[in-house]
Length: 68
Image 1 (spheres, rainbow, N blue to C red):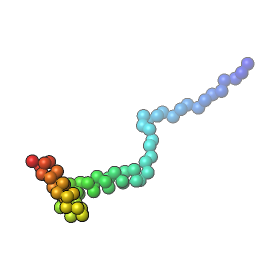
Image 2 (cartoon, helix red, strand yellow):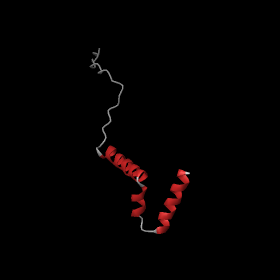
Image 3 (cartoon, helix red, strand yellow):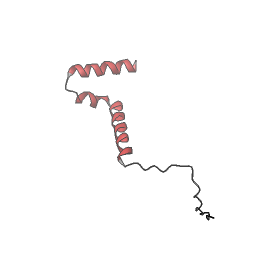
């Protein structure tokens, strides 16, 4: 006759999965969000960075369409 083996009781689960993210998984989207928000709040800086006048005019036209 074989003897039953006793398994240790499982610890109670907290209902959460433990997920560890690298530091850049939060830093990069946050940096992108802040950069885009800065460009939206201060579009003069974004227009000064473009070298082509046609691109600048396109952005100005898009901004006018959005604000009106």
